[in-house]
Image (cartoon, rainbow, N blue to C red; front, top):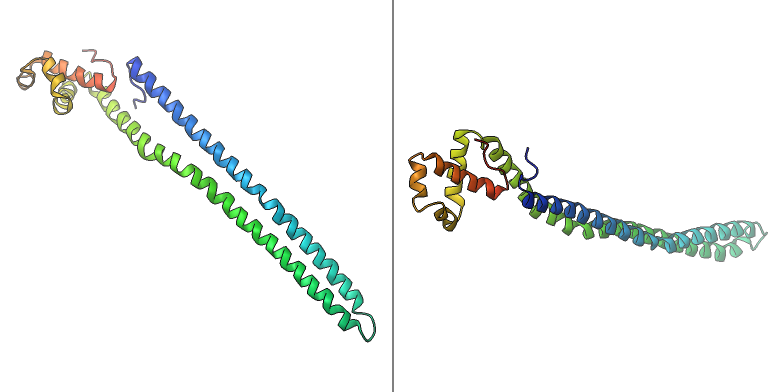
Length: 202
């Protein structure tokens, strides 16, 4: 598998681009983790609210239980404590719900932050990189074989701009059809140069 070009300018660009993509992903992961940590801090008031509400509810329920033992009027004295304990439990539940909401946001917001940068890498950069690796690997495997050079020459004839082809000679296509080895090698080298590969050793 050919990961990088043989020619220094293209190989340098490929290496620098790969490093920048890795750095890009790392920075966005750090941003996503930072967003997660920041959002999680919003859960602290909810946790305190839940803890305080639960504590007040328990204390009021305990006090209501003690007041309820008073003869004759105990039941009537318990009602305010029970109502206040229920209100405190509502406050605790509100704190719990706020924490759940913050937990969901702490998951969704970082994913949203990292989704677009990762999509750019996965759907733009990666397909182009894999396509070059596939083409360069095949070209490197066949460049030293006569039939392989002929295929590379055909590829150059089919894909290179006319200006590049005519610089090799006005009758380059006819020369290739006639099996002219020099024309085949010139066209094959043109395709190898486009991929950043060294010419054939033959």
